[in-house]
Structure formats: structure tokens, C-alpha cells
Image 1 (cartoon, rainbow, N blue to C red):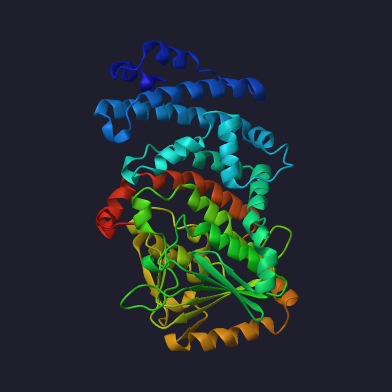
Image 2: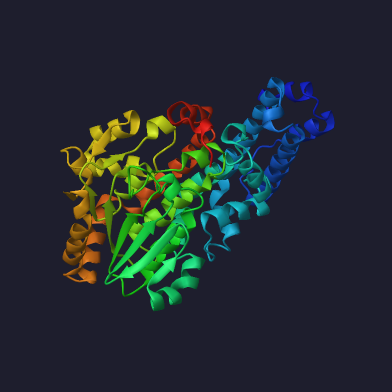
Length: 450
């Protein structure tokens, strides 16, 4: 509490409320119910003080210092409480592990059951109305909470299993898709072609970049491919784009314009990697698993490059650029720090993630990320031939061999502990001044419109 002393009174916060907040500070007893009640009281009182301050763009330097001091104290309290009681909190939110909640459901259930532990929907909605530079960082509490949950072997495994279950939208659409073989999901088009399900990302204005408008559709399409018994293999593609030089792009990574404008929530990053990306890699909860092929034209940047780590075969057009612009962005590139070294080795992975090393299909270094490199006009034929080869021995044998490879490469607990660190660290990267500066310096994001 010493960090906040004197600062709060100096910016005109009511002395009675400041005194009441300080008086609510407590030492944990180790007993869940009294510790939870005390933590909620302290966190709620601190959040009330923060709401009395002007919004960040209108704060004076002293008011901003006061806000940071209170936020820091609240962060310490959350860490202390969750460090002792995270499994009891998780059990309370999931009916003693009987109910499966996705990450978004979980963080908002926590906000309702344990006020102040995570931000409310209203708090996050208000953040999404602000540009990245003007955010208060309330979503950091979501990252810390999910980090603690995932760090727990019991709670973390339960959450991962919840995220591997089919989404409600996919279950609602399954009968229609099985009957028609087509699903138009807006940002994604899915079509059954013979024994394959072709998922085509369509965000043409932004070169098939991913953002909050594409995420649910991508996961729904992956679920439908995995659920449809007529499909043996999934194909990932980028749709046609609006560009004078390129006709089709696999993916341009994260939509940095929406990120800079503050419209991409922090949960996007966690949901993406616990959701559809992990489903491609590990299959659905219950053991439904299939092979995946990526057909890469022009670019596989950022998140699109991350997808190459989880598919079984990559067909790339010669000269396609494959890279992770993590250094120029200032965020963690999904699970690439965990997975990229398996393809290119530790030194090249460090150079790619820390120093921006690029890979080009058709070069010795680039081919470490590709299985076949062909001229761009030959991709369709190469894709058809590869699909035939991968499905000719039967789905059961292929999936079994795929599963055997994965078990040795990335046990579930390895992924779980990685994602625990990712959730907490990415939450801080998401609203850091360095990210805003990088977007302006390297991408001129302040000059672009959504």
C-alpha cells in the first residue's frame, strides 16, 4: 500500500473512500471463503477509486500516477489471492469441474462471482471504445487470471478441454453443412470437395489478415471439418484479395489497423491459440482428429505463419514470404516460440522471433517451413496430388500416426504451461507503450483507417 500513500489524496480522491480502501487491506488466512470475501472487498473498493479518476486521455500526470499506483496494488492483491486459491475459484465457477466454460465465459463468470478479480463486460466494452494508446489495461487482469488457471494442472487441463469442444455455432450449423457441403460464414467460406474440407479465409481488404471479425468464423469452420465424417482432410487457404499485385494471399497476420484502433480485445490472442489453432493441432475433445494441409500463396505473415507449425503438409508457391514480425510489433507470436524451433532449429527460431529473420519458399532456409515448393500456377495440381497421397492409406492410420508424432513433440502439459505464461505476458504486451510506438514506427498505423 505504500506506493499509493499520499498520491491519492493529492489528486482529490475522497479521503473517506481512500481510508476505507486502505483499511480493507488484509493478510490471507488460507481459508477460501474469508479470503475471497476480503479480496472482493479490497478489489471492489480500489476499482471504485479508479472510476473516480478521469479517463486516461484527460488525466494529469499526477492523476495518471495515482491510477497506476492503485492498479499496481490491485494487481498484487489478485496475484496473492489467486496464488493460493485459483483451483477453489475455478471449482466455484465450474460447479466443481462439472461445467465446461470457454475462456471468455470463464473470465466474465469470475467478474460476476468475485467482483474486481477480473474486469466486467462493461469495463472491457469501454476499453474497446478507446484507441490502444488510451487504454487503461484492465484486460491485464484477464491475462493474469487465465495464467493462474492454466498454470494449475487440474484447472488448466479442464479449461483446455473446454476450448477443444465444438462451438455452439458449429453444432447449430452441422446438419446444414452435411446436407449442402457449403458453409458461408462471412469471413470464412467452407466447402467440402470430395474427401477434403477447404477452409478459405476471406478478409480481402486487409490481405486476409485475422482479427476479432474473423476468429469465430475460423473456429466454426475448423469444427465443421472435424465433425463431418465425410471429410478426411482439412485444407487451409487464403481467398482472393483486393490488391493490384496479388490475386490470392494465404494470410497477412494480425490486422494491425484494428489493433492500433483498440478494436481487438486481449482475449482474441488466447482464444485463437486455445481454440481453432489448437484444434487443428490436437483435434477435438474426445479424440476426433484429422490431417491438415496449407496451400500458401504470396505471404504467410505472423499468425498465418504460425499455422504452418500445426499442419501436416505445406504446399507453397515459390517466392512466398514466411515470417513472424514479432520484433516490429512487440507482441508474442502465438505458440511460435514453442513450435517454430521444431521446424527450423533453435538458432533460426531465435533470429526469426527476436530479430525478424524472414523465410522464403524455394530457398534452403525457407524450405524448412515447407514440404513442397512449386510455381504459383501449379499449386492447385500439387494440392490435389498431395490430398490423394495423404488420404490413400485411410483416415484411421493417418490420424494415428499424426497423434503419435504429436505426443512426442508437444505433450499437453507442455502446451498448458506455455499458454499460462503466454496469457499473462501477452496481456501486458497488448497495451504496452512499446506496442503503440512500434505500430506507428514500423506500420504507420496512425495513418490508416479501419
